[in-house]
Length: 279
Image (cartoon, rainbow, N blue to C red):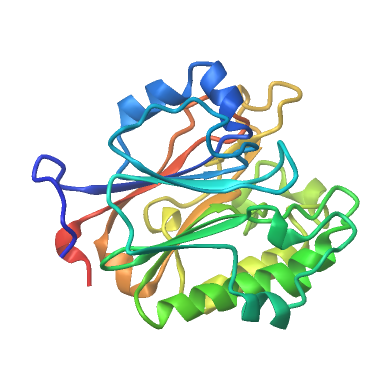
């Protein structure tokens, strides 16, 4: 069973697109978030920094970074109280080659620091900052034909050894309930048929959208445009997710959106696991 401190009877895993970790720290949002929520594992996307560029004082956590080669762009990180057995940045070379993940004009997606996978005793944790299709859909082909299939193969490969917890900024609203204004956004980036199909493929492979285990309907969003006071009006999109292997479903006791946490145009999302129910 998961080895945990008896004073912490639940395992809390968080995911947050910080839209620049240095900016969140400068706004004095990161420290209060960590002390207030005390995640066991924290997955970050869009860090926009190399390890060491951000002043982070978390002595109780191991840090793992996958930073983009391009400075100030993309990037993921995992902070964890529990040392992983192994950590992998990006996909394996075989998966990358098989799915044609090469420079698409914007750059090499495998040099953008978009995936980290950490193996623990009873499961894998994978976090990803999925490529944005762009407002003119110029990166939709990369997303639909290459990235999403590669990501799914990666998750299914890991799942052969242990269940998978997958989280991150998926840059897609899965259904009409996942954005405030679905009709005018049909066919636009983040709500194209292709992007939604890519997400549905994860569901069809047996992964569970944890938030939908507890909440139905709309009004639950994780990203808001910085324009027109969208966050104050809750005119947003749910594009940040936690998906888990079906065998972990019974261990998930809560899935939450923390819209009260500011500092980024995204808010954190989390799941809570009961260690006694882990397979």
